Image (tube, rainbow, N blue to C red; front, side, top):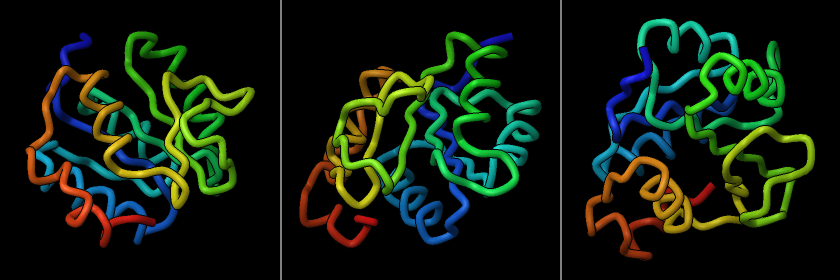
Length: 141
């Protein structure tokens, strides 16, 4: 059954610092957050609870984000997906071969853009303080 909490985001990234900083930023913004270190962990979490949005790195060991997104798209076709990577500087364009609804360029993008994308996908409005550029600066990857 597809009935996720409208503000629950699952962050998947093999870098603990990226996971932790994004999770902290999104929690401060009012989102519920779960994290996974790779695609296999993410799929295990999704067996228990489906998030409102999947935010996944593309390059990870054990199961790449490309593989994870393909599986998730097949099993949960209505689940909004945001792919992210520091390897692509496409800003907000989705790199070729990625089955995602949006793209976030880690280290190149800005967190306000990410909040706007999540808001559109979930219908959830982030806490106003999180939109303050001064607050988002320490969380930039």
